[in-house]
Amino acid sequence: SVVVVATRNKGKIREFAHAFAPFGKQVKSMYDYPELPDIVEDGKTFAENAFKKAKTVGDVLRLPVLADDSGLCVDALNGEPGVYSARFAGVGASDQENNLKLLDRLESRQLGDDTEQPLLSPARFVCALTLYDPVSGEALEAEGSVEGWITSDTAGSGGFGYDPLFYLSQYGKTMAELTLEEKQAISHRGAALRQLAAELEKKR
Ligand code: ITT
Ligand code: NA
Image 1 (cartoon, rainbow, N blue to C red):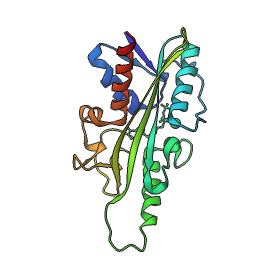
Image 2 (spheres, rainbow, N blue to C red):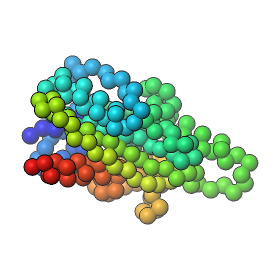
Image 3 (spheres, helix red, strand yellow):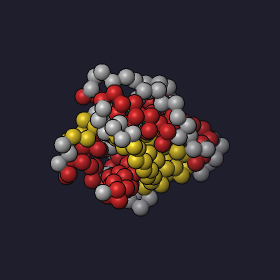
């Protein structure tokens, strides 16, 4: 069977495909349905945006749809980039451009501080999921997060987005140095997926 995920983010698609494969479920994304509109993500929260993506796509396809809105909240930037994580360095910015802008912002705060240290600020990844059924109009929601530090010692080539600069002290590694398996066990997305699964189980 198929799970439709309302995303065009290839990193997310890879992680959902990995999460659903053991259940014999194949993931389809917005790339599989070229008729879908672009969605304006103007919500103030991750949950609002996830709902909007799931509802927009679900209502067009007349199928149950899962959507993910996620991002990075940095303490030293008062929670920024938050819901603007994908377009921190501008609409259409690459992951690399967003990462450079983030390190720039944090490192410039450290100028004049002669104790150079790589851990720049505590931060967390947040993931909001909505599973929307256009027939019943029902929406199930879940949220997960993971705590870490922004490091200027970027490392790793796994994952996507801000993973190379998100340091996990308990592993002594960045998120980009984890395998898909390891990332899913501790990530905001993994946590949100497990919460959603528990909610689905309760309703059966
Ligand atoms: P869709 O809306 O099509 O799903 P998007 O990339 O625009 O794709 P978001 O609006 O949810 O998705 O933005 C999420 C951004 O937050 C994403 O582009 C990354 O920069 C960052 N992000 C989210 N989850 C992440 C993760 O697991 N690791 C690293 N960065 C992540
Ligand atoms: Na968003």
